[in-house]
Image (tube, rainbow, N blue to C red):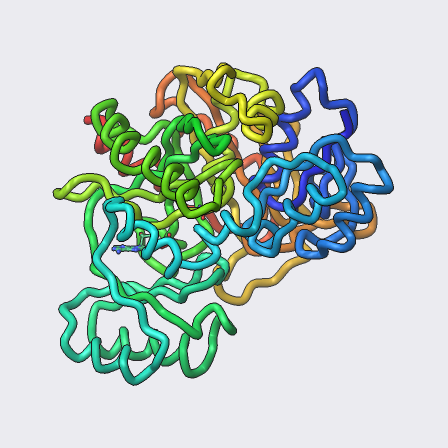
Length: 421
Ligand code: AMP
Ligand code: GLY
């Protein structure tokens, strides 16, 4: 089969490497991919948001199956467009991708179907939002309605911080139209868990749980990023909690989407917080998480392509989805300065004794060398029998990948280890 993967980051590299193991995958194209994954797939310089380009390429190459990984093309309707020309896809259609594309949609869905989440109010007018903040208790959480590269969420500790956040979203349009409407919600506390789940619109099969580390600096300090590292499985996510989530969150969400005429097929990502009052949904994503995928897929023992196609064909209930009993840790190496301004173009060197998985997120070819080209540059993933071993192995391999100004967190998995004790 000819497979096409849309996207270009570490998540897509992890998907490509797993798909490569499938006997059915003969040719793999990745649009646009990046120079760091060119040994694993044919990179094609068509942007992930260039739907016309994607459709034209799929037609020209007679692609048999497409995997649309990032949020933007899913929300823009890449799956709808590819289906129109007869290309089956992994991923939701636009009318279901809205579960991530609009926070207001997802909050209202959860309210209507009694799926546990933080209490909230929606605002379309600046004055009304500001008036509400005058009577709020703090901390409170301000969220832009639409996609904002993971940066549209502000935890405001004071009224002033909340007002600044609302003004920057609604008045200064820091995130463009994504911030024309905002959600202001209750601040929740508790361990966070990411659960990615395969679904064909009827059956939900959760993957192994994971834990992201969103802040830029050790000890969860610094700015929010796309994610600086992950571990799997997440020790806070016990069997009992998993059962509760299935009953109160996962199945009700898939059923709710059906009831709304928005059947969701693909990977549904549940960002959960385990509060004193039970697990609650912090966010939904309509796709695989990044860098969650870089620890989840290495632990998948079943054939990924078979499972994905079962999601597309509605046969997930009859398909085996098996995960290993091992653990994984992924440490992200970012460009110094990220998530703020950073320099790119530094050569990436991998020493010969590197003995882990390398998932490249931001790299390009320059004068025959692979150089950095992005905030998050790459991820180093190790799989081992236990979590402490996986963490130790990942960190033993991190120094074997070098580029100028590299920055990484030294404490990925530390919280998880504390939970194990
Ligand atoms: P999101 O982009 O929605 O995942 O939000 C980014 C991060 O903000 C989450 O991973 C949480 O750590 C935090 N967050 C979001 N919503 C809340 C909330 N209601 N209470 C506490 N923390 C939150
Ligand atoms: N790692 C969080 C996300 O993919 O949204």
